Length: 208
Picture 1 (cartoon, rainbow, N blue to C red):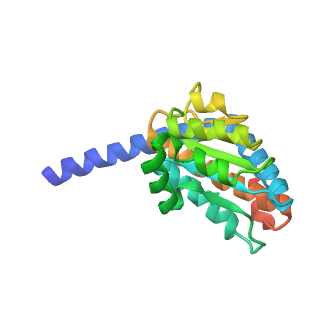
Picture 2 (picture 1 turned 120 degrees about the vertical axis):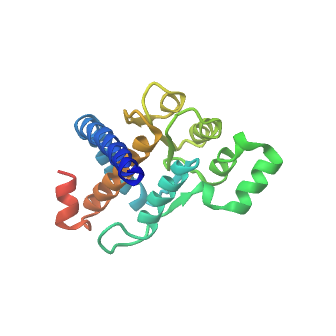
């Protein structure tokens, strides 16, 4: 009986999670997907012209940021040239030195000052949109004349307001926001490849 009851509770929880995700995904598809496609297309133009992407986030958002840069330096679906994309949190020696010497709020901002050039893209991912180290990074991005894109949870939030552009997803939990951020990352990559003409038919259908 205990096993049956526990299994039933787990199945109900899974169903609730999937239901919330499906509802949020439908809203994302209707209201936000075009932004992800536009970002991917414009990112292709920037990187193919010699610019670079800088990406940052905390926790699960750091994983999403690194997922994006890996797809650009490596590949998404079809083989193509590598492009310059740096996940700022991945340089552990720099990160720990900066936090030790300058404090946690400077974690990403100091790296942005080092790496960003005019016209580069800085994408900042946050489920809350309130992380201090991302807000200081956004300010540093503006100082460097980079374009600052904020990929966040529900609006309004400070990071969305600090970015030049924002893609804010509506969802009731951090987990669902992160899942939708991954959808946005993959849509950006598909649009990126399609803009370069290397995505293949599947990527072009995704971006239609």
